[in-house]
Image 1 (cartoon, helix red, strand yellow):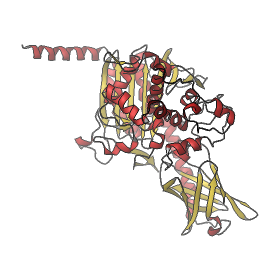
Image 2 (spheres, one colour; image 1 turned 180 degrees about the vertical axis):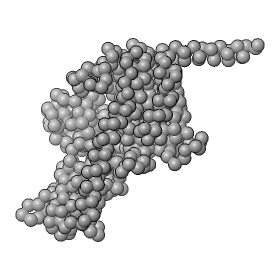
Image 3 (tube, helix red, strand yellow; image 1 turned 45 degrees about the horizontal axis):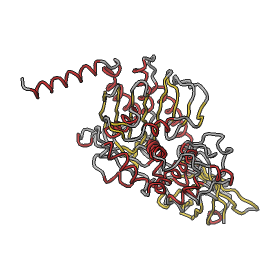
Image 4 (cartoon, helix red, strand yellow; image 1 turned 30 degrees about the vertical axis):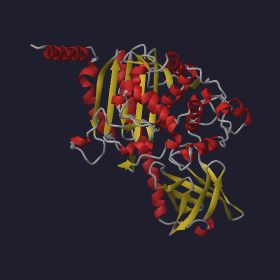
Length: 509
């Protein structure tokens, strides 16, 4: 037997012994579980990676990139298929800034105004105190997602998003509460060009993708469709699986615009597990990596009834919790049509990455927890069934509510005033301007910062209307006009909670 054959068989033997060393669920049941649960959740495609003790235990794709092409091998997901990773991008932004701190270029305790003199928050005292770290750990005083409808997939520039971020009246005193804030991450990311003379996307490519060999990853959403072997995003709308276009979110790039594959993200995870090194080469200083893992904000101080977790914290671009007595560092991501998760436990030398191409599932989280429990020898729980049952109940209730509204709208009840009375221009202090126009027996709302996503208002009687957005991500909601002295004064509209919890009240001009 020649040397090449000996090396080949030794490789097979080592691979087999590594697999045999894995928990029974990973070794014998994982693939069956994934295929079954993907069918339950109607997930078209999924990418999975597991790293344990410095070795890649699992690296593969399941299902298809695009519905309607089942059985076509060219459309099957593999380890190189690109998915949008959403907020899993945040840790890249935080690490880039922590690396500049480690090199003494800046301090994460620097005031934001030192680097962005034009930066303003709603309250002067908060403007004067806000640091880079504040932006990276969600303690600006805003509620979770506050302002996101204004920014998400809008035509605003990055500078305009930061300006509008400062117009939001905070829900809490500065630094007292956690409130997940995408605009805060954009603000921090826009300090990178000031400190490094390079755009955020250039820093991501040069400091992360190139040295880690993440050769297929893209920094911007605008680049995603131009790649080969990429997944299509999907959502469930009226119990139908719809394709979604990639949203224009590069104005929020530091908060969520990266597209990547499990093959590429394994390298990012391995570098995290080795606190800055990849294949023995230092990519980032250990102190930079450790800085992002340091807890900054309390997210939850209560025991989770489903998980072996007692508290949740946020570092810089990472959620941090106890999980069965170990420190778990993780982040989920969501972009129109995609949901993802990446986690690691350094003490266990374990990392799990799950990418899916539908935003109507939490299988990505259930799969992560099921794998964690297998490695940590926890009593297995059927997380997927519990989450699915809750989700199915909520979706059924939402469908029923929408149907009630649609049935009422179909009877064409008369509004309190003639349709022309509702028409005109309206203004919101943060969002800006919208226009309401007559369209047949309904009204059409045109949003100045979302010109490609108008909404149709159908009368429900009195001053209430059924609001159907042409972008299914925004949803179907009830809208209401208010009158003063028999004249229209305001219009209040709402989008889906996963975009923003707040309703927007526009004043008629």
